[in-house]
Length: 106
Image (cartoon, rainbow, N blue to C red; front, side, top):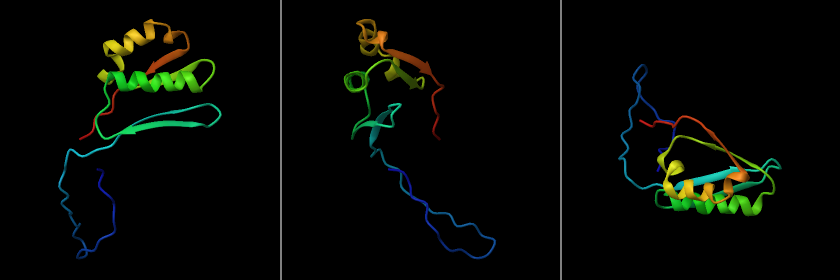
């Protein structure tokens, strides 16, 4: 999980350093925002895979009428074979993809 920022105390001129153990525990979230302001979100305890992304896209197509703009990073799950197949099978008629560069976390 992400570390919390908290106020702490240290001697004047000495920046405190807090050590936090890093784990593989995480919560994966995928979301979409409709023009009317509706927020669509799904989350799970494991990393998202291609079929999970397709499941979310099906939700968006079912809930949002008309064309949908998707803003994606360059993550591999967005260009996996099952996502490509889903788009080729007709979803691309309503989904417009815009690709951003992936974020790199240190």
